[in-house]
Length: 278
View: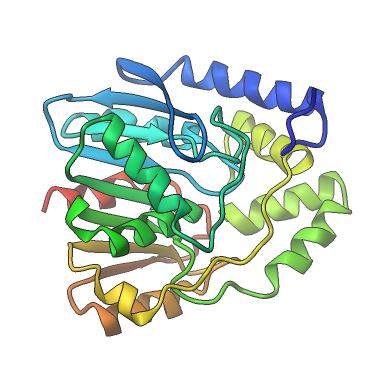
């Protein structure tokens, strides 16, 4: 039977096969977990120093935890890293998709905390993962020691121009996939990463609904140290507006806009580690 979030069984199997092959080369000793939560079984990869503070890594939309793989060894020198596949996305978690409008994501993440017996952890989230991290931290601030948001949604309105462009690119075949890849990354990708990205663009069915904007009151609850990283040429998020709103509501927030970078920021570990270790 086809996975409900893929266009074909063959596409799903190829993407999952590549994911398995990639994480087989995880650059540090690791453990795999299948975690039962209120919103579906969740796959997680843990690595690093088990006696160290916890760092939960949340990937973006239409992706999975493989995106954290190259940084895992760096984080693991200081943290017990927990990379989780968000249910309903392209990883190995339950295909059911929970609501973005209510506290479902917060409940799901609270169950991850419970599984690992965590009272507090640092959170690092990319795009959709950053949105979930911010929502969780606003609702449960005592549970979050530090918050790193990378191209996070929900802080300002999404760019209205992206979805029409994405639809047009999907109709253009290989040329459209190339344009989308450049628009999101704005840098050449290794051939194997580019192949997986384009395969995902063809075969995975992303969620298209809008994120609920965080209120001023919710953002003001983010009293923990907070870092916002964004690309200056982000096609989904107006990162300058997001950074300005955070600075206005949270004078302690640190914001960095990376020149010429797109939405899918890479090589962020040095900046995030500097923030986490401050």
